[in-house]
Length: 160
Image (tube, rainbow, N blue to C red):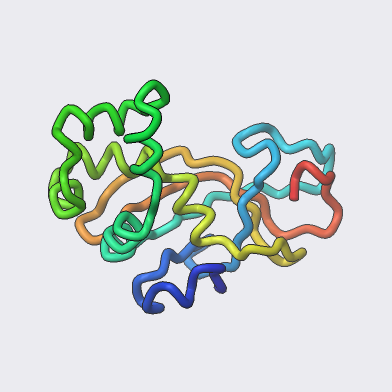
Protein backbone atom coordinates (compact mmCIF):
# COMPACT_ATOMS: atom_id res chain seq x y z
CA UNK A 1 0.00 0.00 0.00
CA UNK A 2 1.32 3.43 -0.82
CA UNK A 3 0.56 6.53 1.14
CA UNK A 4 0.87 10.12 0.04
CA UNK A 5 2.78 10.71 3.29
CA UNK A 6 5.06 7.70 3.22
CA UNK A 7 8.20 9.80 2.89
CA UNK A 8 7.34 11.71 6.07
CA UNK A 9 7.36 8.68 8.36
CA UNK A 10 9.45 5.51 8.65
CA UNK A 11 7.60 2.64 6.93
CA UNK A 12 7.00 0.70 10.14
CA UNK A 13 5.14 3.69 11.58
CA UNK A 14 2.78 4.35 8.67
CA UNK A 15 -0.92 3.42 9.01
CA UNK A 16 -1.90 0.24 7.24
CA UNK A 17 -5.31 -0.83 6.08
CA UNK A 18 -6.39 -4.45 6.08
CA UNK A 19 -9.31 -6.18 4.36
CA UNK A 20 -9.80 -9.91 4.85
CA UNK A 21 -6.54 -10.05 6.83
CA UNK A 22 -4.32 -8.62 4.10
CA UNK A 23 -2.87 -5.16 3.64
CA UNK A 24 -4.56 -3.37 0.73
CA UNK A 25 -4.28 -0.08 -1.09
CA UNK A 26 -7.15 2.24 -0.26
CA UNK A 27 -8.77 5.49 -1.24
CA UNK A 28 -11.16 7.50 0.93
CA UNK A 29 -14.58 8.31 -0.48
CA UNK A 30 -14.21 12.07 -0.38
CA UNK A 31 -17.60 12.99 -1.80
CA UNK A 32 -20.51 11.70 0.33
CA UNK A 33 -18.33 9.96 2.93
CA UNK A 34 -20.53 7.95 5.27
CA UNK A 35 -23.57 7.95 3.01
CA UNK A 36 -25.19 5.10 1.09
CA UNK A 37 -23.53 4.16 -2.17
CA UNK A 38 -25.08 5.87 -5.23
CA UNK A 39 -24.26 3.04 -7.61
CA UNK A 40 -27.38 0.89 -7.92
CA UNK A 41 -25.68 -2.45 -8.66
CA UNK A 42 -22.24 -3.99 -8.53
CA UNK A 43 -21.07 -2.55 -5.21
CA UNK A 44 -19.63 -5.23 -2.97
CA UNK A 45 -19.25 -3.86 0.53
CA UNK A 46 -16.89 -5.31 3.12
CA UNK A 47 -15.17 -4.29 6.33
CA UNK A 48 -11.76 -2.77 6.80
CA UNK A 49 -9.42 -2.26 9.72
CA UNK A 50 -7.05 0.68 9.75
CA UNK A 51 -4.15 0.31 12.17
CA UNK A 52 -2.45 3.59 13.08
CA UNK A 53 0.69 3.13 15.22
CA UNK A 54 0.75 5.44 18.25
CA UNK A 55 4.26 6.51 17.23
CA UNK A 56 2.71 7.77 13.99
CA UNK A 57 -0.03 9.57 15.95
CA UNK A 58 2.61 11.24 18.12
CA UNK A 59 4.57 12.41 15.06
CA UNK A 60 1.35 13.50 13.34
CA UNK A 61 0.34 15.63 16.34
CA UNK A 62 3.73 17.32 16.46
CA UNK A 63 3.54 18.23 12.76
CA UNK A 64 -0.13 19.12 12.48
CA UNK A 65 -1.46 22.67 12.59
CA UNK A 66 -4.97 21.68 13.72
CA UNK A 67 -4.48 23.10 17.22
CA UNK A 68 -3.56 26.51 15.84
CA UNK A 69 -7.10 26.87 14.49
CA UNK A 70 -8.55 25.82 17.85
CA UNK A 71 -6.60 28.61 19.51
CA UNK A 72 -7.53 31.15 16.85
CA UNK A 73 -11.25 30.31 16.59
CA UNK A 74 -12.49 29.28 20.05
CA UNK A 75 -16.13 29.53 18.99
CA UNK A 76 -15.58 26.63 16.55
CA UNK A 77 -13.89 24.26 18.99
CA UNK A 78 -14.89 20.62 19.05
CA UNK A 79 -15.55 18.79 22.35
CA UNK A 80 -11.99 17.44 22.23
CA UNK A 81 -10.53 20.91 21.72
CA UNK A 82 -12.69 22.31 24.53
CA UNK A 83 -11.35 19.60 26.85
CA UNK A 84 -7.77 20.47 25.82
CA UNK A 85 -8.41 24.18 26.42
CA UNK A 86 -9.82 23.44 29.89
CA UNK A 87 -6.61 21.56 30.66
CA UNK A 88 -4.50 24.51 29.46
CA UNK A 89 -3.52 22.86 26.16
CA UNK A 90 -1.48 19.90 27.40
CA UNK A 91 1.65 18.79 25.57
CA UNK A 92 1.56 15.93 23.08
CA UNK A 93 3.16 13.64 25.68
CA UNK A 94 0.25 14.27 28.05
CA UNK A 95 -2.34 13.58 25.34
CA UNK A 96 -0.56 10.38 24.29
CA UNK A 97 -0.49 9.08 27.89
CA UNK A 98 -4.04 9.98 28.87
CA UNK A 99 -6.53 7.27 27.81
CA UNK A 100 -9.49 9.68 27.83
CA UNK A 101 -7.74 12.29 25.69
CA UNK A 102 -6.32 9.64 23.38
CA UNK A 103 -9.78 8.15 22.88
CA UNK A 104 -11.22 11.58 22.13
CA UNK A 105 -8.33 12.17 19.73
CA UNK A 106 -9.18 8.96 17.84
CA UNK A 107 -12.75 10.24 17.43
CA UNK A 108 -11.57 13.71 16.43
CA UNK A 109 -8.97 12.71 13.86
CA UNK A 110 -10.30 9.43 12.46
CA UNK A 111 -10.98 10.93 9.02
CA UNK A 112 -7.51 12.52 8.97
CA UNK A 113 -5.98 9.13 9.72
CA UNK A 114 -7.97 7.60 6.85
CA UNK A 115 -6.64 10.25 4.49
CA UNK A 116 -3.07 9.60 5.64
CA UNK A 117 -3.45 5.89 4.98
CA UNK A 118 -4.98 6.39 1.56
CA UNK A 119 -3.36 6.76 -1.80
CA UNK A 120 -3.68 10.38 -2.93
CA UNK A 121 -5.06 9.32 -6.32
CA UNK A 122 -7.98 6.92 -6.74
CA UNK A 123 -7.24 3.78 -8.74
CA UNK A 124 -9.71 1.20 -10.03
CA UNK A 125 -8.08 -1.49 -7.86
CA UNK A 126 -8.38 0.50 -4.60
CA UNK A 127 -10.74 -0.40 -1.80
CA UNK A 128 -12.80 2.73 -1.12
CA UNK A 129 -13.30 3.59 2.56
CA UNK A 130 -16.75 4.96 3.41
CA UNK A 131 -17.41 4.80 7.16
CA UNK A 132 -15.69 4.50 10.51
CA UNK A 133 -17.92 2.49 12.82
CA UNK A 134 -15.61 1.69 15.73
CA UNK A 135 -12.52 3.28 17.21
CA UNK A 136 -10.28 1.62 19.78
CA UNK A 137 -6.77 1.75 21.16
CA UNK A 138 -4.95 -1.53 21.64
CA UNK A 139 -1.92 -0.27 23.55
CA UNK A 140 0.34 0.43 20.57
CA UNK A 141 -2.16 1.47 17.89
CA UNK A 142 -5.30 3.44 17.20
CA UNK A 143 -7.57 0.96 15.42
CA UNK A 144 -10.40 2.12 13.17
CA UNK A 145 -12.95 -0.39 11.88
CA UNK A 146 -15.41 0.53 9.17
CA UNK A 147 -17.07 -0.24 5.86
CA UNK A 148 -15.62 0.03 2.39
CA UNK A 149 -16.38 -1.17 -1.10
CA UNK A 150 -14.30 -3.63 -3.03
CA UNK A 151 -12.52 -2.40 -6.17
CA UNK A 152 -14.78 -1.89 -9.17
CA UNK A 153 -14.58 -0.11 -12.51
CA UNK A 154 -18.29 0.62 -12.78
CA UNK A 155 -19.34 3.05 -10.08
CA UNK A 156 -21.11 6.38 -10.01
CA UNK A 157 -18.88 9.44 -9.72
CA UNK A 158 -19.99 10.01 -6.12
CA UNK A 159 -18.77 6.52 -5.15
CA UNK A 160 -15.15 7.04 -6.19
